[in-house]
Image 1 (cartoon, rainbow, N blue to C red):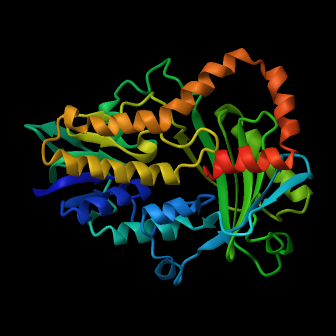
Image 2 (tube, rainbow, N blue to C red; image 1 turned 180 degrees about the horizontal axis):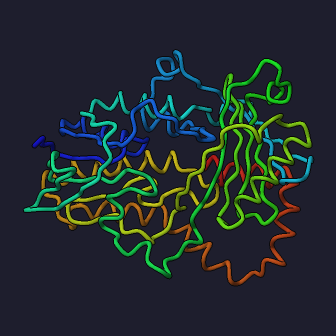
Image 3 (spheres, helix red, strand yellow; image 1 turned 180 degrees about the vertical axis):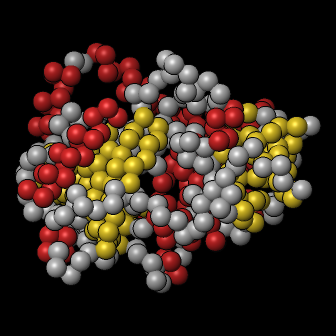
Length: 371
């Protein structure tokens, strides 16, 4: 039986950030993940300067052999309309990365011991210790395995029961491919200006992002029942307007995750959930990379401060931080939603998406860049 101080299930940005911070504090961490890294992880994939700072990322080292595309602006419009509003900042406000490279880099840099290509099939809490797959034992367990994390299911056994709220579940499909030499539409995509296309119902958006020699195209929304129709309409729009050729013939990947809500319990005795396992994506943009990294780092700080005593009361600072950081915005949105009928605010919101000042200050700076 292998033993460690902290066992982390999931090697994505949340898990690797947590492991990195724990190792720097001298805590022995093991990361278990069902995938082998580098893994095929398709994502629109951009990180803000805040992420670079929080991870103390050596940009010069990272960009050697990896994609690191500065974004200095965005174009915003509606699916079905060729009219777009452009906001330029004159300096990088985000950086395009490929998740297959980014995740592998962070996991390797973490310095943790790794158990890859190993699903967490068995999770048992016995005599004050967690035992995973009958072979790894730890006093502290961290769930970082995304929306379907087995640790999240272990401490939230009723989350999938009939009647559980699903309206904050984002479903998305996307494709990432290398630019073909003859693909003029993809080649013409401005690498420093990603394009965002909001659904007319304003419950999701599509994107076209160029990152070096690659293009990522995708769309996500809250209404999972209409995703197939939404994707088909978005692909048709891109091809009809010449924005991307032969997109429909590419290999598309699907995934799901929750935007930040209090629906999942994220703290228990000797267990924490971080990243998508806790449902922490920002509600305005659906962006999950920075919340994953922030939660991983704060979870590590909480574990270090607990000094080997991992009762729920010692881990409460993490729960308090989650509540302060993520739940306030969700409560405000939920409280206002019933007061303003969709027939009133939706046409107004569509009109505002054509206003450069609104797009820049509200949609981009507050919603996507969180400046």
